[in-house]
Image (cartoon, rainbow over all chains, first blue to last red; front, side, top):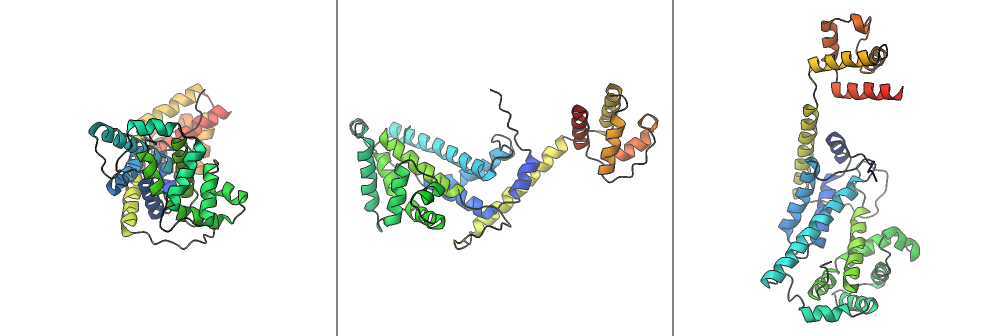
Length: 194
Length: 137
C-alpha cells in the first residue's frame, strides 16, 4: 500500500514549533525520557531530547502534516529511550555489571517468572507499589487497576470511574512518581527485554 | 510475558500522560493545574532549538531558489506546452503577490519586464501554483 501522507516542510515545522510552549514541551520531553530510561541518566535524557530535534531538522524523523507534532516528538523520545534501554540491558548481560539497576535476575529466575500468570504478576506489581513511601492513595490504585485492565488513556479512565479528568490527571501525576520501584523490580526479574 | 505486558501498559499510560498536556501557546483552554515555572535551562534550550529550526528552514528555502534565467526558461517552456493558458495564470499570481501587473501579453513581454517581475517573487511557490492550476484545468 502506498503511504499517501505528506510530511511537513522545515518551514512548516518551524511555524508549528512557534505555536508551542517550547520550554514546557522540552521540560516534559526530558521528564518523559527520565521516566523511560532504566538508568535514569540525566545526560542521556538531555542528549535524546536534543537528538530528536536534530533528526527532525535534518529529515531523519518525519512529521506528517495533520498529525500532532507533540505526539511525534514524544514518540521519537520513546523510541530512542527504548533503543538506549536495549543497549543497556545487553551491556549488563555481557559484562555482568549492574550499575544503577541492581542484581538483574538470573536465567533460572527468568524461566520461573515466565510461568507466573498475568494476575499473579499484577498482584506483585501492586504489592511493590504499596510498599512505596507514601503508598498510593485510593484513586491512584484505581487508576493503576485501570491500566492493568488495558485502559491507559486518561479520558477513558475518567469516564469509566467516573471521575473528573483533572483529578485523574493529578492522580496519574502522583502515581507516576511511585512507579520507579515497580519498573526496577520487574527489570530485575528479567522483564523489559521484549 | 506477563511482566512485559505490565511494563508496556505502564509505558502506554505514562506516554498518554505527557501527550495529554497542553503545549499550545495562546490557548483558550483553562488549565486548572498551577502553571509551572520552567528552569532557565529549558528556556535556553527552547531558544536554541527555535534558532536551529529557523536556520534549517532558511537553508531549505535557499536550496530551492531558482535562478532568473531558469525561471524565464520554465515560463517559456510552460507557455509552449499550454498555449494561451500560462499567461493568464501567471498574471493572476502576479496580482496576488500585490505587484503591478499591467503587462500586455506574455509573448511580447521583453526580458527586462520579465526580470523585474521575477526578481520580486518566490519562484518555487509561483511555479508550484502555476503547475497546480494547470493540472486542475
